[in-house]
Image (tube, rainbow, N blue to C red; front, side):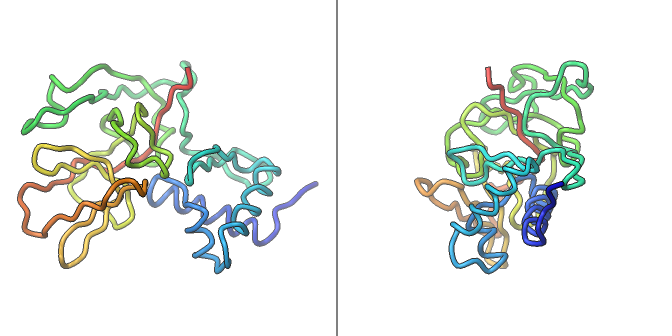
Length: 218
């Protein structure tokens, strides 16, 4: 029977920990940096080997397109899956938030386009709402236009987590980083710029933390 090598197991655990801590898998560059590889090619080779052994799936076209699979080889039993659940598993009703009007709460009635029944086990934490993604600023995190981002309401976050933030009249999805000088919101697409927010800016607030993603393939 095939077994994971020590290095493959190390990479698998790194991916699992990243998903548990931030809601999303690491990039090839992050894997290479964490494990001291000289290039992302080495990380890619190990990922392809894990895919061949059936413990992960790799989605082409995104740097974070890695999904853990249930497998006796890895002993992994998934708590979150980035896919729409089977109807028989649907248990949790979540409001779907579309465009957010300036100055009003994100869960205001006029923002809710629909409700989705989903299995709460799909997410790293229980979400409070789904947000329809606009634009491609988080493309390389595997978050695409039209996706439904599962969000847990929160007014603070850890560095590295993907958050839904409000800046003035705009609501945006970005990767969060706070320092003594303020907050930086990082896109996952080089075509977009980092958003910097002063620590004393009263126009900035967090709406929540991303805990998963739903995508309809139909």
